[in-house]
Image (cartoon, rainbow, N blue to C red; front, side, top):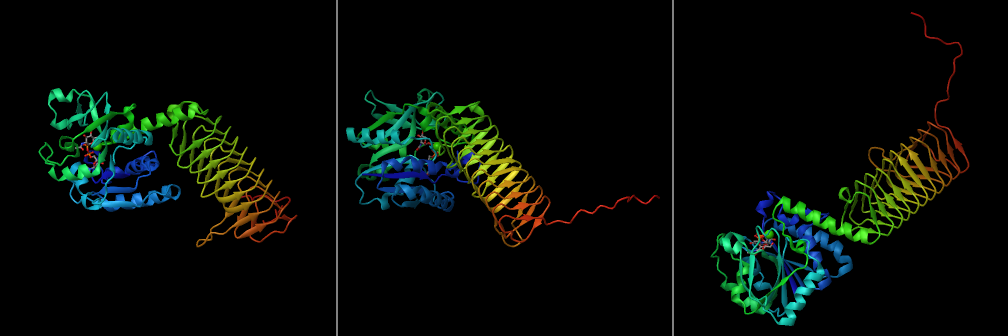
Length: 460
Ligand code: UD1
Ligand code: CA
């Protein structure tokens, strides 16, 4: 049985921010949310988060995001434990004592600011911990630049003798590049017994969790294969570096899975995005959130797709697609904006300077130039003329426009909602249509042209 505790009470002074450090975002998710999600496959029996600085903010943020993740994962309810004064990582874990009195399993402790951990690594840590019957097992890594991390000193069997924070290191100790990742698996009853004995006799006068290694019988270090996994975030520079690492992993994976990227350095992809083989991504393309793109689609250059689903062989050029669905073979852009649950059918063309908001569009429908269609439902094979606008807002409420199959609107039509145009309707160019139009009709709603033969400007 494994319980998880996440250290998230510190302010993160080096971030120079009012926002608690663990709430800074990395690729669309907060640091602490990422840490929490790395534990999902472990099926922990308890999940405790130690909060302090900005406790309410951290609690609210985690409760919101966790509810979404938890719809599928059925994790135990998050328990928040408050550490009123931040007197160090050891002090933070001391706050768990009254909450885990009857707990006899292992406690996995994670720093809330170490966001790139892989679940496999955690599983491996727990397995080694159990196999060896250790009192504690911790993750270590050899870093090329170990500045800022605690250094781990082991004997030849990887049993930890000492962890010394960098600020407490001698010059000789600082030369050791084997660092403490801030990820530990403890035998909880053994840890609980010695926790009250921690002393704050160090440079920061804090109670260090790392000092528990002196008090526990068998503590083992396990090195991670890829040190980038355990990079801790203490500054904005670290945050930017971690983003870089994440992007590198994500893009390498998708390329190996058959996605073409033209100039990958200019492309960003959240790790929540799903792609199929033969997707082509052009420069300056950004894929965010829960986006899914199917085989053969060609995205970019210069496009942002967020929380959207694109079918097969869709093309998107210089456009923004948010919270929307686009079916197979549809062409978007250049310079289109789909948002607010636009749902576009197959084989459509959504062209230059077209905005769709909360619009349902059938199959083989064209909206090629300069249109705004908001709160609209369009059938199949509709042709929307250049400059057609739905006037969906009367200043108080939004209203819907319904356009039947094969209907065509002339250029510069204004469709004043609520409005229904039937099937096979033709709207004359420049019309302002305010009343419903039955099937198979032509509607002309504009002033008739007047010609005055022989008329000239009066001479002055
Ligand atoms: C810690 C480790 C260090 C390790 C590094 C890895 C200690 C003493 N040092 O140092 O050996 O190399 O992590 O990233 O543990 N926190 C609390 N309450 C507190 C203090 C901190 O909850 O009173 C939380 C912070 O919010 C943060 C985590 O603990 O999420 C780590 O704290 P931080 O101050 O960043 O520790 P480091 O100096 O990085
Ligand atoms: Ca840290």
